[in-house]
Length: 535
Image (cartoon, one colour):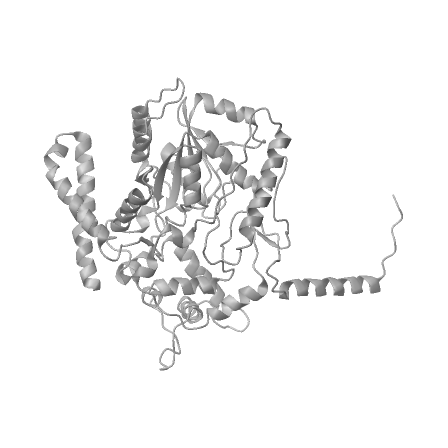
């Protein structure tokens, strides 16, 4: 071992000064070509753009995203201090082309066969992924954050290939954002797999919104089936998710809520209706429906955040080989679950099984590997880690811009009942920063030394409430404000009334008719009266 070279205090001081100078130049630089990566594990100076490894591990499967420059963040912060303009209800109406233009595609696994070596397959995947990043990267100023870790995309590829039917989980508050058409086309047209779209968290919105989105997906994506799901029972008093009075009630959520899953049975019925045939595998779907049609309840919401030491799950802790993948395809019907982070994939699995078998968390990206849970000898679930797809949405790294986005589409001042010290001034106009300041005063949030309103803490609480559903930002399909879907629902309610006698004669029919009748009362006629009040 060579002898250590003496390092004087003077040289060390000069080295530290130079290092601070270089760091300052990087932070103050507005260079758009800066390839720093924002890493979810908290590593601030983590720079690689592509993450590849021969041995996937929890560290390698951590998501990585593009980082904005400090000047861009400061510019967005200053913009949030300017007065905003409230938008009409049409601002909440979106369609796929608003978020996912045709030019944006997802990385697709290159061609492979069983005669190729592992090194050949992985080399082709890495080359393709580099080319995809370069193709997508030139539009990065307009794109949102998206997954840049190859290992995470590999998990998605494996799950799609081994699955016979895909459960595509989307949050009912913004399903278009969670349903990229490029992935839909890849699954349906290239892999020729069946898709069932599961609208999760339906307890947060009104039944009219749920109905409108189901009708929209039937029209826009005719090759998919739609079902609804919620880990909590729906609130019967929620007849509108746009009226400020009902939105105020949402902020007063109970501290403890029991889990009571809604929608497990329709998921199995949808799988049964697809009539999946695979070699000699025969699935008794009626037995599965009877076995797993129970409620996941008697557990408090907060208890799910605690890590359970007895979690019953099978992780892909070793590299996924082609041989393992081939064997898995022969003897089992695999139901794959894909979607964005934190849309409820793991919660859906727990609800289906009736107990906690996979760990779920409010933190996005909690699932690191694909996980398999066997429901019977020939049916299993496969949970894929959540993936963020590139989309045309803004990417603020400070909370004020997000609060402004909310304020333009929601009456935050009315919902939160805010009062600002300067609002008596005739020249005063609300801004995102003023909303955060007023909310900090109402909550008693002050900084430690100067005792000023802690606007940053207030802004983060507003965003946290939005994520939890206490502040409800619910997007609608195009044509929602014109009562298009209300008229469709009224026509369907008349159809249900005409079939009442047939429904009463069968036990299952009674349940279906009662469910439909309750829905008609909830978002057929009562919503019409609510809309009249708003007008």
